[in-house]
Length: 148
Image (cartoon, rainbow, N blue to C red; front, side, top):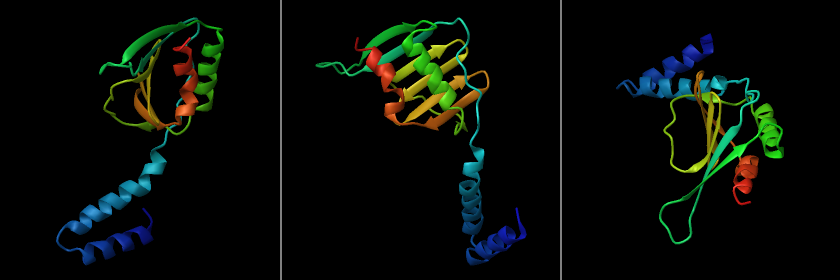
């Protein structure tokens, strides 16, 4: 922290002597530090491993979603699209312990386990649990193949 940050922190602590100043300082430090927590992950599909894709889609007339399981073989157009997605999305990951939501699109490839749901993707691997904001367009090709 720079000396100006200490001055700002002291000012906040004096303005809120009841202990709220500490909370405000902690929150500000957290908010300022969040962009620095972004990680780059060297993502790649494992060689010669088929990729399992599980898509949960709403089922008309039912409360439970329909489950479709597909296998992408190395060299298929969808496999290459997924490989390109990995290459283009190595930056911007946040490490954490996200709560797994229900539904979405699951991708299992060796040690990599992804769950695309709404505007985020969760990644679980031996390196930890990570999360990233994405556009639903970014993974629309995975839901499209389940409709064939």
